[in-house]
Length: 178
Image (cartoon, rainbow, N blue to C red):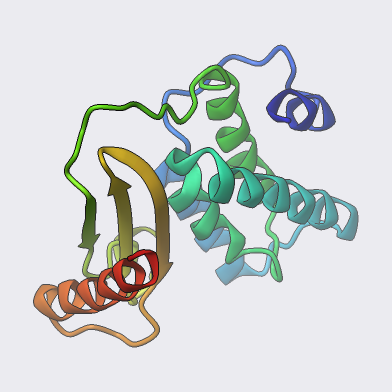
């Protein structure tokens, strides 16, 4: 499926990227949004299609692009000129990691382990976003079984508040998986 997406985007022979998203591109996207430099309807449609493909991969087999896809999906309604550059960065990252996958092994008897983390307005310096983001990773007997990332709906006033929000989401997932 990754090769199909790369071909659709014209990136079948691209150079692989070492990370899914670069903060400089996000800054440029935020500046373009502020200035009202929007992409054409055709480019916006292509962007939303690529985000949909990326989102499917992030939710099924490529947890490494979850945060990048989550961040970029926020520009679906107001796609700027640089949005295509950003999603192509994600696709270029996928081209270099297309052979990687989730591996499940035996031997670990640790049971369900859920890890959570958050940031405090982590994108504020880049895009001006003041909400915090949480991430969750769930493993069963050492094997990855679930992952999530999302913005916290309210503005957190401290890193402790952001961590409590993340912990709350982690507990919800753990109870669901138990």
